[in-house]
Structure formats: structure tokens, C-alpha cells
Amino acid sequence: MLTKKEVNKIRDALSSCKRPIFFFDDDPDGLASFLLLYRYIKEGRGFPVKTRPKITKTIFAKKVEEYEADCVFILDVAMVDQDFVDEVKVPIYWIDHHEMQDVQGVNYFNSLKNGGNVPTSALCWQVVQDERAGDLWIAVVGCIGDWYVPSYAEILQQNYPGLLPDDADAPEKALFETEFGELVKAFSFIMKGSTNDVRQLIKIMTRIDEPYEILGQHTPAGKYIYKHYKKIKEEYDKLLQKALKTKPKNNLVTFKYIAAKISLTKDLSNELLYRFKDKVIVLAREKSGDMRCSIRSPKNIDVLKKMHKAMQGVEGYYGGHHQACGASINQHDFKKFIKQLQEELN
Image (cartoon, rainbow, N blue to C red):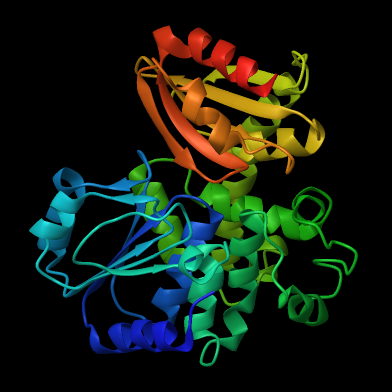
């Protein structure tokens, strides 16, 4: 978690800026982190980081300049290029929980500094909770979407009985056995679609006050979000049924698919881990000559450590957490990667 000094530093930065720009990961944790900070100050503009979890000079420095931002917030993004920091002439606040990075010239807040790994949305909740108590549900969505059940989930259970039952004390149970899991998926599916659609959906989310606006479709804004969720879910369910027919090879489940428009690898890999409980999951989407992978493992396997050797001699990159990471692998090297990963798991 953040120290009191760190919380105050972020609050001061938020309160003093007029045109902040937010770059955030395109998953429930990243989206929730953005919503928490944006709703706290109601200023600025958000941009999801969709291609890879890295802030580069080429793409993102231009966005800072075009928006004439006076402050940059980077949320739940694993990597930041030094070139980006050197190019941008305004303060940068990077809030994250991935492996620690050595980048100079940024205000860097990482839960690993303080001896723990909690989602970025939990860190952002620390910052805004005193003034935005009603946004607790957003913080819990971000946390559970990142496979972490925070202690304050109990408050949500009291405020919305039945949405997240008391016995949903494990993230996988909350995600796949409760109505709250639908809400997490809705957050994830907001990030799927055309750039214009995603921008519109995010804008609408900044104005949603409580979860049943979406799940119960109680408002026009909630109906709009839910309609998009159901549209993406139809495609998701088709892929899930195909993936469930995959036969594990020893302790590894590998599923490849082709999708022209949207990526569902993160969501599918999480659910496959739940369904194939003791297996390592490699879900790979073919795109532009690469295999875009989401890799998951049970708690007794440090798949990130296994990736160090599995990627040797393989063209591509990877990164993430000990039980959940992503990778982009040249299509021609994919069989080699799977073979080396299998050897490491054995």
C-alpha cells in the first residue's frame, strides 16, 4: 500500500493540476484506477494503453503535447521509456504494482516498494476514499478484476447485499460465481471495440454512480454500458466454449484463436485458469504475424520465472506478475516457446 506521505503527494498533485492526462492499462484495474482519480477532480482526459503495457515517446509524448497537459498520471502500466520522460516537460506521477523499474525523473509509486503487491486501483482508492466514499464499488471492481479481494469488500457486501455474497472470499469465486463478476467483465469489455466506441464508453462510465445502473439497467447510461457488455459477451461465450474443449498436455493448456477486431485473451485466460484449476494456461491470439498471449498459472507455480527461460532464443517480449503475465511472440517461434515452457514446467 501507499504511505501517508505518498497519498498526500498524489492528492496535492491532483488538486493543483488543471489539465491532467491519464494513461492507464486497458483492464478493469487500469480503468477503475482512472475512474477513481478522474472522478476525484473531474478534470483531464484519459487514454487507455492498448497495444502493449509500455509508455513510449513515439506514441504518448505527442498526446501530452497535443492536449497541452500540465501533469501526467500513468496508472497500472508496467513499463515507461526513459525517452518519454525526458521528452515530457511536465510532472509525471506513475502509480503501479508491476515489477519495479528504474526510470529517472518521475514520481514513482509502486506497492512493491512497501513490501506488498496490491492492484493499482487499491492504491488510487487510498488517495480518494475520504472524499469519494460512494466510489468504493469501483475500487472493488478493479481489485477483484486483478484477482485481489480487499478488506473493504465487506463494506460493499453491506451496501449491496447479494451482489457480492459473504462467502465469495476468493477472487475466482467472486469473478465466476457471483453477479459482481458480471460487473468486472463489463469493465473489461468497455475496453473492447473501436477507438471512438471505447472513448464514448469511458466517458459514460465517469458519470455512473452505482453498480445497478449497469447491471439493472436503471438509467440510460447504464443501459448503454450493458448493451455493449452483452454484445461482447456473445463473442466471448463462443470462444470460451471452444477453449473448454482443449485437452491439456500434462500441466499445460494451450488455446489459439484468430480475431480481427478485439482481443479477449486476458478475460478468457482468467476463466480458463478457474476451469482448469491446476493447469498453466497459454491463450494466444494471432495478429500481424505475432501471437499475443495471456499466460496464467496456479499459485504454486511462478510462471513469470518460468518465462525467463521459456523465452530464450524466442523473438518477442513479455512481462507481468508471478501468476499472470502477457507476451507477444513471433508466430514462427511460437512452437519453440511452447516446447521450452513445457520443459520448464516439467
